[in-house]
Length: 160
Image: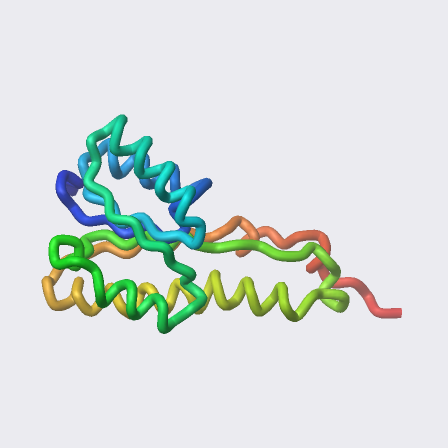
């Protein structure tokens, strides 16, 4: 079994929900955490709780995964002790709109694609080369049940 002690784990979308829960589990296992999210104040609150409860080593990144330039800059400028990421948890994601497809919002679609697909690709693109160079690393992509079970708004309707 893989020991998580002192492994560097980067979690996107870490400010709430599944990301925050992942952070707690990895902190409990002794991992060093890089927590990334748009809402920095929530990251600070989470880091304070985890630091107090588990004495975790934590580095925070205010990061919008939709912004490729920001992703590149943030990841390339990680301090040396934090630069060799062992585990990437691609968790940042969102869902927008429950309108029927023909009434859907282009802005909602673009925001979801930019976050859920392009954001995952941007972060992965800048992390995986280091893993390959070191000959080790793990990438975990977290997705929604929406990938398997459609919302009623997206079901096909017979056109009259």
